[in-house]
Length: 272
Image (cartoon, rainbow, N blue to C red; front, side):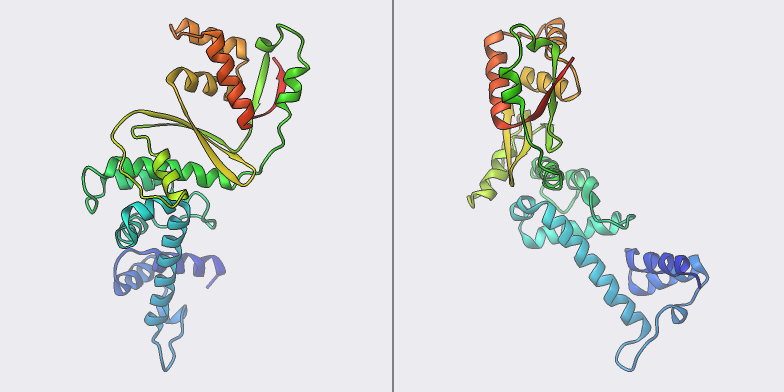
């Protein structure tokens, strides 16, 4: 048996959501290879028992990955309920990659419809999963040096509208149906998590050093920051907002920009 065939056989058997007997049958029928050709039994454990150890280790490892990426969600659900949800997700969505990065990308949609959770809790827990997924991605992103403040002071008068503010890579802009950032912060601060009421929440999540920070945004601020993060010059972004009937009061825009620069959301300034 080739190495590739062996790996495929083991993947089918280990990730199969059914019983050990069903998993072996599925792997054997798909690869036309018997378990005895893949795993040797011993006096203490049969071949199928050896395989079941690997299956259990796989499920526990995947659950730990989900818990590591969504600790506030796990805390909000409770350890037992989170384990139930995670195992159901793992059975429905087995790993298809050699890396664990991004494994839980479908978890929010799964939580939103999972019958094992209270119906009124599913929506905000799904948003908390989305928020924590962004945090996990930010944690894995390299921290960049920001020179925007110094570069802004060196710009000629009137030139600011013609430049691009280059965002840091460790930045995500989210629009959620529930304000879950305070719930996540409560977990960080070791305070009780309170289920939020439904309300549109626009938030930017970013990394500053080793810490993850977040800011609530108004709709106009979200639209402006999204345009800047997409590469628009400040002038073009403001003109587009004005065309849409959005109030772009200069004093308000200046306060937004001052806050965003102080928070380190941009790494440098480029000519438009």
